[in-house]
Image 1 (cartoon, rainbow, N blue to C red):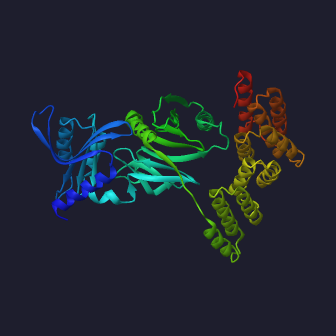
Image 2 (cartoon, rainbow, N blue to C red; image 1 turned 90 degrees about the vertical axis):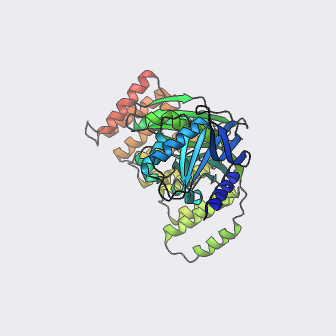
Image 3 (tube, rainbow, N blue to C red; image 1 turned 135 degrees about the vertical axis):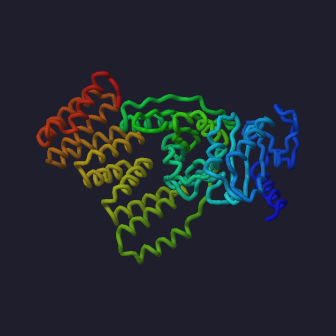
Length: 466
């Protein structure tokens, strides 16, 4: 590729990336400080999502890697022409020192270095993340990329361009995204934050939370930023939320404390410009193919996975009835699959199939009746669905099915916690005391369960809901 083709390809790329801006080629701009005309290969000016931008792009056709001196010179030029951002593009790559100088320099403007071949790699600058019919078009903040190869929960991760996800995680500087389906219209960002804060407090009770006024979106959607300082973590965990009609979309940012303000600006940019859309699915053909495959599968676990995949496809087509029927077929094949049982309980509760939900909840509990995680998961499922009373009735019913003191202690303890979350302190106290008696029959006095019971007594004394 000769020099002219190289510059034209880069110009075309930026025209496609910033279609609403004015993009000029080979511009001369008077420097504010130098008072001389500075040559800019590509100048991008305009408004994106309400922000005025001015980006200076310099195309380097070097025969060697860009190094720190090249970045220093570019920094000076970008500041002199009063650009907000600068992009240095090279054919031969860049040294580690050069990329560090660009990303961690003290200048007010943001800088980035891009190897031309990276423009079209699996690390991209925009990606569509979807769950069912709902999707959000997510832009990468300046200097970062969406990594389609190394994903978290099937969604692209976001980190500094030029790094792998593993390298970014070692630096404690990266993001992941997630969706939360609103089973009830009134369930909003505040409810999700409260739920997440409780989980974080379980990790470290010394955690502190603060909140930032988030961004104003043109569509008026509610947004919020929560900052969690967890003593056990070597980073600050910051989460940005956008509340849509059917989902809450959130992005979790991990950042070193010294880079927090800079990286929160990147998070704010995503919250401001991310766009949602609806996807229409017709999965009938792929469902028929999957059903044909099931007829030839003997392994029951694999067969169960197939039925659950079919259920998800029906969910994507808003066919809840067929979705639930295939969840049931999957569980019939593999009755002790913990994750799938949780899914079918959640689905039954969302459809108001209370008796079915109770049936599969009992089935879930019977897998590991001594494990405290099981009733804890049930509490989460039923509280999200606002079926607390149903949960209490079911847990009390379970106490009639067992005689083992350890199992009964587990049940009584979590009945007490459920009542406490319902602000029924007297009922909570009754079951917690019974759990203490039952655990006393099987555990030594220094067992951690008694620490949890003592914690309950402190909470009860101060009138705090768990």
